[in-house]
Structures are given as C-alpha cells and as structure tokens.
Amino acid sequence: MLEIKNLSLTVEGDKGQVQILKDINLTLEDNRLYVFTGPNGGGKSSLAKAIMGIYRPTSGKILFNGQDITDLSVYERARLGIGYAFQQPPRFKGITVGELLQIAAGRDIKGCSYLADVGLCAHDYVDREMDASLSGGELKRIEIATLLARNLKVAVYDEPEAGIDLWSFSKLTETFKNVHNKYDTTLVIISHQERILSLADEIILIADGTVKEKGSKDELWPLIMNDIGFTYFRDCTERDENVDECIR
Ligand SMILES: Nc1ncnc2c1ncn2[C@@H]1O[C@H](COP(=O)(O)OP(=O)(O)OP(=O)(O)O)[C@@H](O)[C@H]1O
Image (cartoon, rainbow, N blue to C red; front, side, top):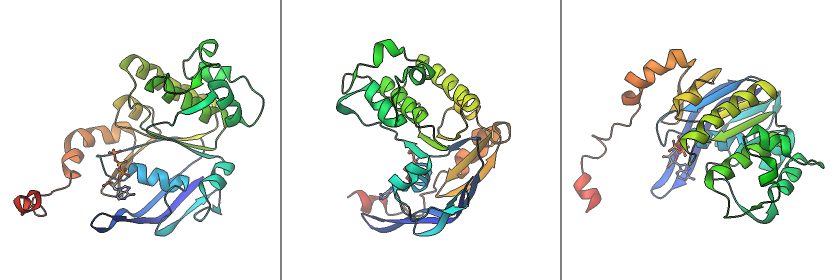
C-alpha cells in the first residue's frame, strides 16, 4: 500500500516560487488500477514524479507498505518495486530490445512473453536496436514491456496513449486490462482517455495541485463532462486584467 500524506511541492519557477502540489492525501491499495486525470497543468505528472522520487516534496510524507520512503532516491524506490514510465520514453543507442528487457528483469530472459503482452511479435523486435528507427508507439509499448519484466509492485504510466494510433490504442487498452488481471501490481495510469478511465477501479481527479474528486467512472464521468471541466479550468480574468501590459 502506498500512502501519500499531506504532500506539498513548491518549485522555483521563472517568476519565483510556485506551489504545484498542495496538501495531497491519497492511499493507493495493492493490486488496484488507478487513473489520474484532470486538466493540463493540474499536477498529475508532478504527483507521479513525487511518488517515483524524481521530485522531492517540500513537505509531507510518502509511505510504502508502512516504510517512510520520502527521502529515498529514485534508485532506492526502484529497488523496492516502484517504477515510472515517462510520457516520452527514452531511446538507447547500442542496445537491443531483448537486452533491455533482460536488464529490466535482472535475469536471463528472452522477453518474448512481455512483448506478446504488449501486442508486439517478439520475433520482429528482440534484435531491434532501441534507437530512432523505432516508432513512438513501438517505443511506448516496449517501455510498458520493460515495466512488466521488472515485476513491479507499483507501476506508474504517464499518458501511455500519447503518440499511439487509434488501432494500437485499442490494443493498449486491452494490454492494461490484461496486465491488471495477470500481474500483482498497483497500476497508476495518467490519462485523459475515456477508455482508459473505464478500466479504473478508482479515478482520481487532480486539478490546481490538489485531489478534487475520487470515484468510479460512472460517478465521475458525468461530472467531468458537465461541471468539472469548467469548474477546474483556472479563472484568469482577474489575474490577466493587465493582459495588454503582460504581452507588450
Ligand atoms: N520543474 C518545474 N518548474 C516549474 N514549474 C513546474 C515544474 N514542474 C511542473 N511545473 C508546473 O506545475 C504544474 C503542474 O504540472 P504537471 O506536469 O504536473 O501537470 P499535469 O497535470 O501532468 O499536466 P498535463 O496534463 O499537461 O501533462 C504546471 O503548471 C507546470 O508548468
């Protein structure tokens, strides 16, 4: 179980300090699938990066199975079984897909079943280099396969649908459904897609640096479509009164 307690994060922006996460309290139970959603700039990726240890909170705590991991590094958290898939996966020149999967698994594997789990034919990919010759969608799926190979306890996927075509997206949705059934992993998927939201045991709506709502898709979807989209869009009328001055 991952517990986030009173977590706040302030960073140094161009115009001084900006608070991007505000007193977040959240419990992520074992083996459940959570979707973080909400307007752009609401704080979803920042929260995910705080879970992974890429961002250190200004205040608050993160507990993993009762252990305080707030001050642990990304590597220490990775060793405990927490992993993060970036919005834009990195490419690695000079290493093949098969080798990357072996490194991820930490043992001698062919990686074929993990590639099959993400809808890629192992035969076509194990010997391919992890370089620019791979398409964005292929790269995304291979990154998901590496997270599967790591047998994580908590896996966070940041907008896995980004750059994936409609056909592959259907398969990807199916992949997450299968992963949720097959692996004992707590899944956190950051997404704006209705089909991904449909997979969630719980949707967590994050806006303006805080958790605004939690619930099932049936509970939250009508709110997202009707009220929340408007309610949580930042109202700039007051702040941008002097907009002419600002753009001059
Ligand atoms: N290192 C940083 N320095 C300054 N501002 C930052 C930094 N990281 C994030 N922010 C700001 O914090 C806010 C939240 O960003 P974040 O990427 O977490 O949002 P998000 O909900 O994931 O957005 P999106 O849906 O667009 O991916 C944004 O306004 C962003 O510009």
